[in-house]
Image (cartoon, rainbow, N blue to C red):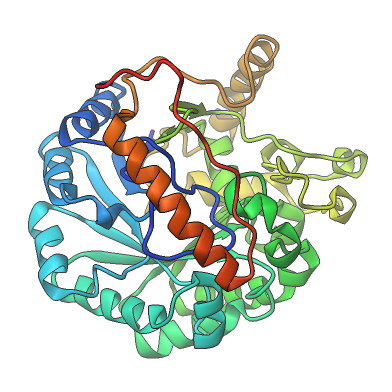
Length: 396
C-alpha cells in the first residue's frame, strides 16, 4: 500500500493563521530524533514521508533530514507556506537534498483575504515565487488549501488563477478546516465554515480541474457534499484501499496511527448508498452541524472502480470489483472487532517524538509572548498553552 507518514519537524511558524490547528509547543527536534522517525517509517515499509509543522523550513537541518529520508528510499514531500522556498538559494538546497514534492499552501488568490488568513503581509507574492522556484529546480508542486469561512465562496477563483498563470501545477488538495485544536478551536465563529457555504464553489473548482485534466484530493468533506467527485476523497480512497496514516506529532500526542476514518454520522446516513466508504463529518471540535448531512444515491461500485482502476495509482492489488468486495468485507469484520478494544486514534509504539529541554521550554515561553501580541493585534483569540510532560528528560 502507498502508506505515507507525517513528521512534524517544528511546531512554530513565521505566519500567524487564526485557524492554526498545530501551534507552538515546547518540543524540539534534532537531526538524530528526526532520523529515528524516518527509520520507523522504513521499518513499517511506508512509501513516503511528508515533512510538516508548524513551518518545516524553519528547522536549520531540514535539508539534512530530507537527504537522509531519500537515502533510505522514501519519497520525500514537504508542506510549506512557501516563504523560505521563495528564496532561490534555499529552493535549490532543498532540491539538491532530494525533495521531490512541495505542497505549497495558498488559501486565497485575493491578496487581502490571504493576508488576513495568514496574519502576515506579502505572503501571496512569496507563495507564487516559491512555486516558480520549485518548478525551476525540478521539485514537483501541489497546491494545498484549507477550506474556511473566508475563502468558502471563491475556491474556484483560485483554480482559474493557477490554470492561467501556473499551468505547470497539476495537482490540488483541499482540507476542510479542523475545528478541534489550537487557534482553530478558539476562533471557530470566525473561521469554521458551514458545509453549504463551500459546496457550490468546491464543485466549480473540482469541475474546472477535472475538465483540464488535472488531479485533486479533498479531505474532511463528507461525500454528500462532493458526491460527483467521491472518488477524489482522501478518506474514501484510504477506506477503499485499506491504507493507514501515521503522524509523528511534535507534542504530547506523540505518534498516532489512523486506520479508522469514521467521524460523525446521523440517522439519514443509514440510507446513503456511499455510507460504507464515506469518512463522515470530521467534527471533533463540535464546529459543524451534523444536521447538514444528507443521503446520496449514487453507485458505490462506480466510485470504487474509479479508485481501484486508477492507472496513476498502482499501489492497490485488487483491480477487479469482485476481488475488492471480498477483501473489503474481511477488512470490515476485522475493523469492527478492533474497534471494540481500541481508541479511535490509537497511539502506537515507536520512538519518542522530539524532546523537551530547558532551552526548548524557554524558547516556547518566548514564542508564546510574541504570539500573544500578534493575536491581540490581529483580533484573534490565542489558544491555551501546551506544557511539556512533567517528567520530560533532558534528551528524548
